Image 1 (cartoon, one colour):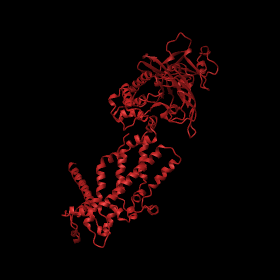
Image 2 (cartoon, chains in turn red, yellow):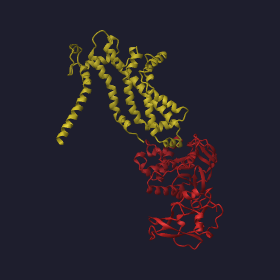
Image 3 (cartoon, chains in turn brown, cyan):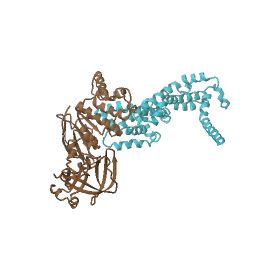
Image 4 (tube, chains in turn purple, yellow):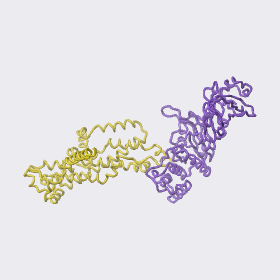
Length: 350
Length: 282
């Protein structure tokens, strides 16, 4: 059990590619941190640097109180779950779990207790004598988790562990991982490109883009108050709509927009902050043509083309309102839920 | 339709049977010839039915061979061949699997260069480099020794290349998982790579054993002491040795005995052999 402290961490590949730039992150003991970002944002590289599978170009990495920059993965007291599980195909599940303990010179009896305990926790006891080949995807995933569990490490590192599972199993395993982490209270670092996974799992999110940290915070904080344009468009589904402030001014909304400071060029509107009913709070009103009506069960998505806007705005409404494609619709957004951004710096302005 | 199909199948079977007959006939003749007394061959007609002397011929071949002409008994040559073939096979396998391991899993300077150097030697068969190789072996005083028989044939680009290709198909995460699990490079090699390569090793073992067993030119060049004669070159010595007519019945018995070990190796390792060539456990 230990926290992880990352200071000014950089990774430059021999070819000169800067994969990770100046990362500072303080992870408390027992915290569940999710690294999220689009592919190529450096999240996996960062995780692999913590694991010791990639060298650190500059900066310091501490696990507990120990600087581990130059330690082998095995000496860092971490366990890793790989995207493709990387189970040893010729070993039984039991031996897969026991291998790391054997290498560390644990006593046979101790290994046996730990393996059986982990197997019980993950409900894979009946598969202990099978080879990975004879297991389903979900079962393999559990074995991969088990291999990390038995070690009782200072930290779990998970590299997109659910991306090889089908949608239903993914949700189920997501819940289980969350439970497991709560129960064991082991510091965990979890990499994913799936923002839904990120929102539901993490105590804190670290949103990465282009090798840099865009924002760190609790999932709801990040969702409610994205600090940059990138975070605003990346977190949330459907994505946040971006409207130019001049366009809104042209639509006669000048007074309502007065509160936004200088430099504000874009206003973000979450699809769920747009309403068909005029709200009591201060608001702006717009109208657009309904291009596409997309029912998604309990909710529906409306694609509205507003004159002057390059892309249609997406709006989320409950149920299935009786609307016709092609009809003109008035909608309202409370000014309090607009997210102002400076398009040149990409930063939030309020 | 049915009619023509039956003729077609009859025709193709005929072709196949003919093909088998052409391949099998010489072997059949050799086996038959090895069961006849020496006098049969002087008449100049090849017998096609078994003769009465089978046991006697094989016993003579195994224990005496053509000792009057200075050729050792077959049993000694068989042993020599076995030692040479096993030394070549095991040497080739261990060296090539280790070099493939180095090339795939370690980042050392000139890695690609070394790989291509190894690959280049694929294009040079033993016969091309036989004169310099002979000089080197002679200078090292390895003529008439098992070391001289096997060491020059041990380096194998083919096996290195095959192992390299196989190792490349093993996901890199496997090595990383082993690193996180506390296994160093050699432990990873022993615990993970070797068990995964078993079928490949078996397939290569068969191929390499037959290659080693069938070496002819090289043993012929570097052995002058009959104690180191191998069976495949020994056959030739038996035919040409001495002034008298070749003892065909003994030569044929020797030929049959010489063909036996490779056949046995294939029979016993066939299951693994086929598996190694067609599928990989991943």
